Picture 1 (cartoon, rainbow, N blue to C red):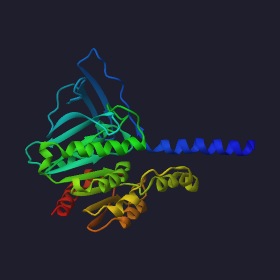
Picture 2 (picture 1 turned 180 degrees about the vertical axis):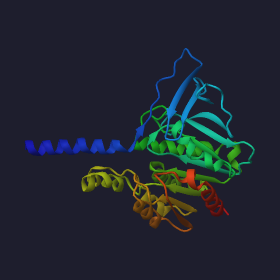
Picture 3 (picture 1 turned 90 degrees about the vertical axis):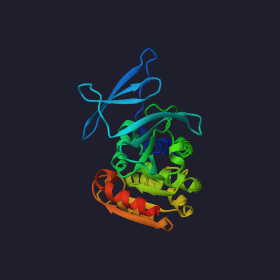
Picture 4 (picture 1 turned 60 degrees about the vertical axis):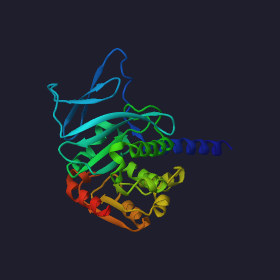
Length: 298
């Protein structure tokens, strides 16, 4: 009896541990009430971002390392909106300068970091006539609440409803662009809201929570992880244009999981095989991705 109880306890603990692997948010400290602005510095493989945030509106101002204001090729409007869970979320509506945006992208990002480390994925597409809305899930960045798989689905649905109602979006095609965990999530959101969108792009996504758990922990991961919702179950219900992008050099999400997703999708659909690391498509292939999206919308 003691052995059985210990085994059950181990399984329960392992299950909680596995289910916690999917979300690794960067949570920013509470903003000081006695200051109008706060500066946050992030470092990536390419550069260092120094950003000054208004503590009331969360509006960002990008600075050089010498603290001079940077001139960008796009504008950012920081907004706050309510998730369906009730949590207050932070998002950025990004528009290109000097280009008339005629397509809107709703970016649903991966499982880690926050808006400042994720928004850059959409920047290479702006010059091709896209505007983009990026946002943080509950518990990420300045967004309130706790990060959970239940909450991220509510958050993504709320982001879609928010951006769809914006005046600048009403007369443009709306495309969901999901990456990694956000790619898996976007399949579910798209299938639930087909009347609100025109197309779906999934890059570097896993096919199901159980499939990606099995990558790191074999049958035990598949056994212990609760599915909750699945792109594999959602895609057969989605009937609008679909573009799946996956790199053969992706070491985070196996290429075969992208192929598995594609097999579940309905026509019209296209699989775009690329190179380079995980979810670097827009960085290296912005021209061709933009062209493929536009072709889907014709």
